[in-house]
Structure formats: structure tokens, C-alpha cells
Amino acid sequence: MKIGVKTKILLAVALAALLGGCVGPRDAEGWSSSQKNQFMKILASDKYASICNERPLYEKVKQSQNSRLMTQLLADYTYNLANSCIDKNTLGDFGAYWQKVSASDIQRKLRAGQSIEQILKPYVPEYVQFKLLLAKYRALQQTPGTSPETLRKVRLNIERIKLMKPNLGKTYALVNIPEFRVRIIENDKTSIGMGVIVGKVDHQTPLFSEKLQYIVLNPTWNVPDSIARNEVIPKLLRDPGYLKKHRLVMRRDYNLDSPALSPASVNLRAYKGGEGPVPFKFIEVPSDKNALGRVKFIFPNHHSVYMHDTPTKYLFKRKVRAYSHGCVRLQDPKLMLKYLTEHYTNYTFAQAMEKYNSYKTHYMKIIKSLPVHTAYLTAYVNEDGVLKFFPDIYGFDAKQKLNF
Image (cartoon, rainbow, N blue to C red; front, side, top):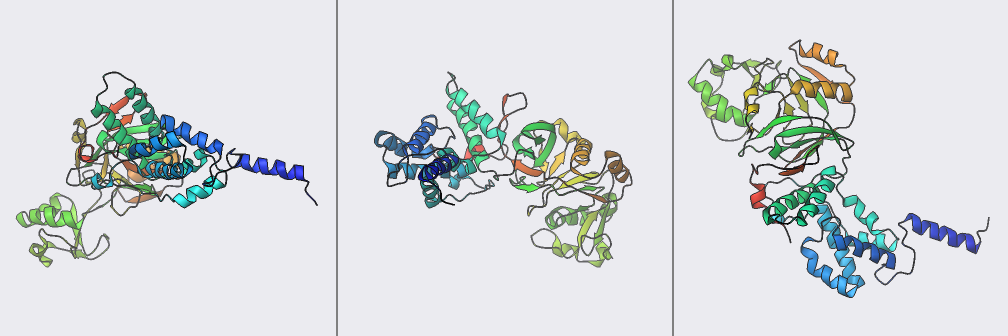
């Protein structure tokens, strides 16, 4: 079957439209006039807050319309959108998900006729907070009397969202550390939320993203070797009844069925303080006073961090709640259990409570994707659309510098 010239032209136009509507001649760098106009419009408002330290280059491009400089600026703008405008040297222990940005790949997309929006889209944060904070930032820029420090704080948090793990959708659990709050957000709307206790300054809750995989009812607590060395063993040496008082047992490993040990059977003093593995383990058995409470929510990660119940309910009366060794303690674990059971497992809440009330350890698998993000947002637009500010408990606001 032969295709006529007219049909070929129509197909070419349709293909170009599909690739972004950039029809027309291209210069040596691969730019069409349509793409140039699109990019200059994005830059004029700095739509994605990513000109940052490239403003001198932007001014040159604006004056000259030089295609080679424009290609360089597009690559730099994309990099800033993907990896933030925070000076890497000032991030400290701040967790970041770096994205690769290839200038040659960007130019290839240009030559293929993709629109600038299509080129930038893979790097635009999906999190609704990005758009909300950006809108507040622009409003504050136009508000007389807004302090430079307020603008800086909002902008820092816009940049932090760029550093979060990309492409995890519009449904997730968000633990906002400085706010001491966790939310389950579904289709960009908050379904439930509650207060949390996070890590101390010297045992910070790390910033990362992993998927929730299972719930543990009536958990045991496997005492980490660092806590065994620096807390349990020194107290046990002073008080031989310490284990019984705190519902702890000694085993060869973190399995309650492994061989039982007694304090007298090991050289405790050899493992007091310091670092490194301990060749025996302390396990707290299930109870209302267990350090993990009655339920924990597991999203496996190399930090060994999870969300859990806690017997220290009185701490939720305090405004600043940084008391854990890094894990996230929940103010209303039964509400979290009910919601997750009903929406993310094959169990009913009644079935979950039957297992809960047995005081025996049970596991419930999560059957729908629910990423859990731990984030450090000292500025956040809440469910009522109000911009809120929170204390810089880990000092990241003070340390981090913007590349402007």
C-alpha cells in the first residue's frame, strides 16, 4: 500500500504534535521557535523555582536568545529542579535522593520535538506540597513586610521536596519530623493524621522512603546492640533483677525459640559500652509495657526504623517530642491499625483486634502500595490551606544554604 505525499505530511504533523506540538524549523542546537517561546515563558515566572544560581546565564539568554546558551540553561534548570538549589556541602546528614540529569539526553528530546514541559515533567515533584508551598512563596514575595528569613524558610522547604524520592505517587504516609505528625495522604488528600514522637537530636529519625509491607501485633522488642551495650548491660550489672523488672529475656539471637541464657553465663563487662556486635541478645516479650507497645508498622529499611505504639503516652502532652532512638512512636496506634487494616490488608478490624487481644505475636501483610516518607519540612501547608512553621529541631534550617 502506497502512502501519498499529503498523507505523509499529515502523519508528520500529527507525530510532531504528539511529541509536544513543536512544529517548525530547528536551529543547529535543535531548538524550534515554539520550544524557545515555551522555555522563556517558564523562565519569566520561574515556574518551577529552579533558576537559582543560574540567573546571570538567564539574563544572557534573555538578551541574546543564543541557542547554545539556552541549551546549557535548560540542562542547568532541569538539574536544579531534579536535585534542588541547596548547596550540597551544607546538607550534612540530610537524606537526599539524587537524580541523574543528562545534557545530551535533554538535547535529544529537544531534537525529537518534545515540548519543554515534557522534558521537565519527569523531574517535577509529584507531592502536592511542592505546588502549595510554591504558591505561598510567590504570595509572600508580593506581600509587603515579609521578612527575608520567612522567604528563606519557605524556599528551603520547597527545595527539600525536590530531594525526596521521586515517582511514588499521590498516595503515601508522610512523617513530618519537625511537625511531630504523620498523615496518610490519598490522592493528595489527608485521610487520617496524628501526633508522633521522633528521634532525639543525637538519634535523629533519618530521611528516606520505603513501602509499608506488614503490621506486627503484640511485637517483641529486639534490643539493638548499641542500646544493650550502653543502657541494658550497665543497668543489669548494677541490678541483677533488671531483666525481670523490664520483661527482658536473654537469647543467643533475636529468636525467642533460640537457647536461653542467663547473665551469669556470659561476660557482661566485656560488652559494656563501646561499639560492635554483642554475641547474645536481649528481647522484650509482648506486654502493655513493651517499649514498642502493642503494634508496629514495618517498612523495611537499612536504618531499622519503623512506626509503633508506645507505653510513654504522657510524652504526647509535650509540644516538642524528640525522644526516641530514631523510630516513630504513634499517638493513636489503634486508629492507624484500624485504618490500615480496613484499607490495606485482607483482614477486618474485628479480626485484627482478636489477634491483638491474644497477646501473641501476629503478622498482617499489606496488600496495596503505601510508600512511607520521612520528611523534614519546617514549613507546611496544612489541610486548611494555612502555611505553618515548625521548629528546626535538628538544625538543618540553620546549616543549609541556598545556591542563589
